[in-house]
Length: 446
Image 1 (cartoon, rainbow, N blue to C red):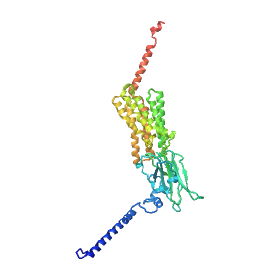
Image 2 (cartoon, rainbow, N blue to C red):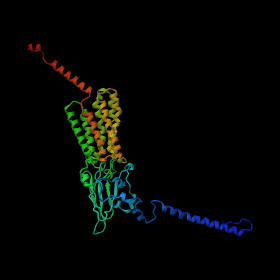
Image 3 (tube, rainbow, N blue to C red):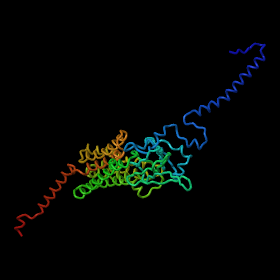
Image 4 (cartoon, rainbow, N blue to C red):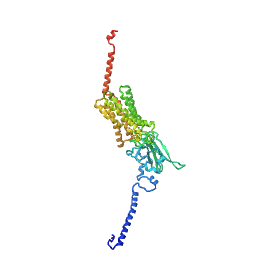
């Protein structure tokens, strides 16, 4: 240890100590920024290379787990963990702009539970792993599944042998939003998928072999639900035309609106331009909610039996009008992503249905059950997706709930009080006919 004298006769030593301390402080000031730079460079993800190299570099993860294998070892593999997304809120970028190194860092892992409430073109990116030497790549089909905006496009990079520039091939789905992936090469192949809007809650793309795609009965769950809605609509319409009671006609109209939304699916809304066909897909859930309270009015006969309850049902048709028009307004287009959940709104009719049941109105319990079934099916569909069930099957749950509720409301017989009043009317008509017929005395006087 060095001792610096501090006595009165140590002037030179005292001056040397001051200079030494100043040198130490200056050295510390010089080393502090260098130490900070070294620490920043050692942090994960930090890079001080050239900008182009930094944008092209991938995060420090095992890329073999992120890449799509050139051949599937199992009949189906989920693609969602291997996808990265980027939202173009301007809606004007093409695949060449998206694939530039400047936009490479804008992609992030896709998590359906943390997607923002925004509107734009969603670009999905995945990478095909290189084919090992001596191996052969197998045919892979991409099943986009449910909740996909209309018109997805797959872009495959291709090097033009004449110009040696990268060109992009467009691959469009043939049936049921199934795409054929490009064949793997000896180098990694990055592909992009363009979606005209953010996908729905039950979006879960799957990689399938051709044999698995041909035998995938789960993809027909939505088609079966649509057929069930069509059968229920025809049943309600036929019984409404042949039997007394207007509530079956209103139920048929309600199911028709739900059927239209199911057939048209999720419209393409990311670019901000909506056609008449897409506008009809947006309006149909709200129209269905506008028709359902009129089903309750005619089933419970509130106009003759309770003016207050009748006024409630009339006012409850206004939320359906709001749901129909709100997604078309600027700033609310993100609601299109959640239109498949519209049967949840039938809960707003539950208090009125309970009030009718308390008052003893016939058909109130039936209408109450019809308003509770669709939300229950939606909750089951969401919980089933988290439990590992097939996304296609869970996506059809709202349609099955709507079909079953309409069948309970209008597919069964008339309520007891309505049937009793109908029988009384027939008896009165029969008595009037008997009283109008001439008796024996009248005939003898002729």
